[in-house]
Length: 227
Length: 344
Image (cartoon, rainbow over all chains, first blue to last red; front, side, top):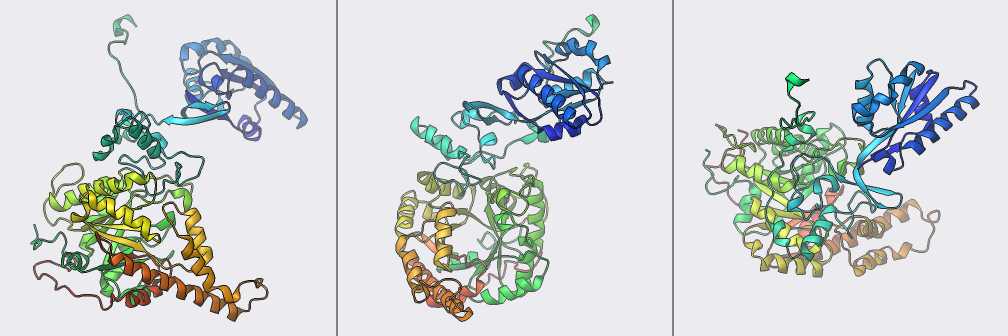
């Protein structure tokens, strides 16, 4: 899932600025599951903004709504009727959601209420960790299902650096050394020989380094004549 | 292609090692400013006491004079440089172009490293690069040297950069069982010499070298063991507890503490400036003594071709270490006349 966390109320207030009527838009997918921007959080942020601006002596009108999926235009249509009554949208979607709103409603000012952090999973209640960096050319088949691109601080491809100690990364003890994990897993499965090959430099073109990415599936596209 | 006379680069370090001498390299830390005099002064401390001096590349991710810039000053000073290059700050384009320039400036030895993460340094908010890793860097630079191809596979004409290429290994970093194999991978990638992380625990290092020798790696590479003088018991404990891969036996720390015993039990306020100076000198003497013993033990270990002295910000210590270990004067291996040691 995409994991995000809320910006501080202070920052949100600065982003909202002088706008009087605010619509907080939550999202029912990833950010709901990671407790950052679902219906519950949208209602809480809206209430906080109302109370805080009231205490400041300049109360704002804040309402909230949560769509099923902020990252698809068709799910945004349900908020269209509300747009005439608001000055600004505070999106509690991920960065994709914010941009989907901006693209779908060119005349509406939208600001982000979350910081989108990474693609990852919950490792325990209340803890999420990064797992994928969307490099566009998956190498998990070489590394026992543990990604060194996303999980090694230096994205190394040929084993650990000299900073691996007691299973953790040199950066800090809270980060596991991805290469220790890979080594242990391959070792336990009798596949250490995989690590003896020298992996060539990665082709980063498939990653963000190749420029913004796009996938076109001709088999799924609607025939232009029918559009 | 230039006549290499069988050498990769024909550098002094390569000639010394090829001739079978026990080599000595020493680290020289460039300053955090643009003052070339700092390099010249440090060069004078090392000249004659080592076969080549390593110039660190933004060590611990702190901005310093570039290793190539500082290395060029060493060339002018007549002290052979080993320039270090890390993967943190440059992508494959920058690495290759800087190395073409370094060769043109007369630099002949290169050490390839991963590099400390930037969060340790003075620009923790920087974006890192890590486009390629140290193993891939070794492959890239030996490819430029031996096949005259850039990393992309494109061939180039004219002078190729002929470096004596080295890599590093930290024998006690984890996973410890993988370390000799990782070293083997670097050799397979094309490294001709290896410099290790600081070693204080000789018994543990012997086990590492046994493994390296059992894999036959010692026959394919010159391994220079990293050694360095301890400055104080506090520094020793700090390194032991905070630097991954550094093991310091308790007896060694006790020896350092004992050296400072005459001043022990006194609070900071009770110690005069003279006391502190005398205590520092006592610690340093002991640190140098321990380090000389380490060098002597290293000379007996199978597969060890030399030592790499890392006297961090204490270049003055190199002279007494090399002299004390009986490694002075440094041998002279005649420069093969066909190998150009001049800037291209």
